[in-house]
Amino acid sequence: MSTVAPGRTHWAVAAGHAPSVATGPEPLMTSRDELSLLNAGDTLANVRVLVLYADREPVGPFRIGVAPRRLRRLRINDLIFPEAVRLDVPYGLHIESDVPIVVQFTRQDTRQAANAGLMTTAWPG
Image (cartoon, rainbow, N blue to C red; front, side, top):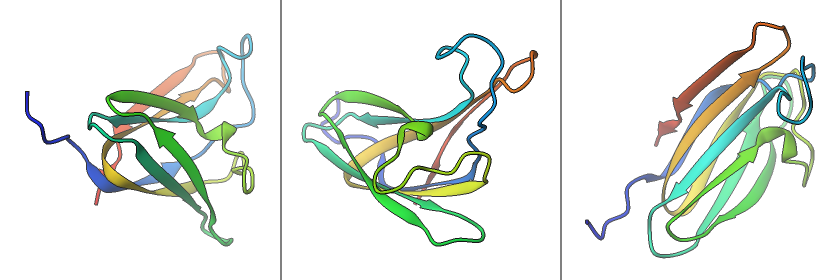
C-alpha cells in the first residue's frame, strides 16, 4: 500500500439543507445532513468546518478530530458549538484539515413517507 494518504486539505459542499421535519421513528428516521470524514493517514486530522449562509454571517469554525486510519461520521444537526447550524435554511460548508482527508456528504430526507437519500463526494479544493 502507498504511504501517501489520499485526499485533500480543503473541501466544499454547496447544497446543504438540514430539514427539521421527519416521518418515522426517531432517531433512525431523523431527517439530516451528514459528513463522512476519512483520514487514511498516520496522524490525527484536525478538521475545521465553516458554515456559510446566503443572508447571514458564517458560523464556526466547528473543530473536529479524526483519528489516524479512521472514518468519522457526524450529523450536521449535531454541530452546535459555537452556534447550532440552522435547520430548514440552505447552507454551504468550507472544510479545512491540517492533513489530507476525504469528505463525503450525505442527506436523508424523511419529511414525507416516501423517503429520499442523497450521497456525493464534496468538492476538493
